[in-house]
Figure 1 (cartoon, rainbow, N blue to C red):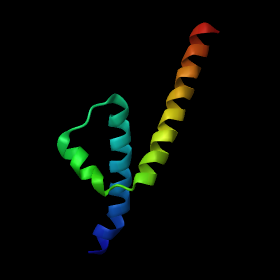
Figure 2: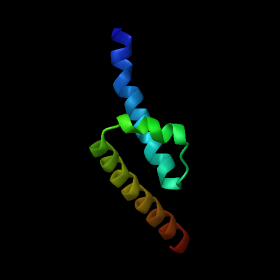
Figure 3: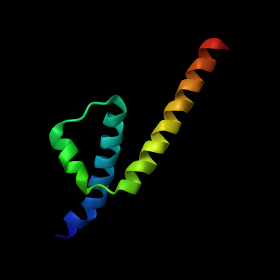
Length: 68
């Protein structure tokens, strides 16, 4: 019982990252989408914003490396 409680936040955090990652590509399974109802919406929004910022930073670094 204690092990389940310790792994629940980690599992939920990994599920959150997985949901945001695959959503950036627009590829989601229906079963995963239905399971995402248990994720915290504020955490999803924050992870999405952070993911978008990281994506833009990576694009800028790649462009500067190619151009300069």
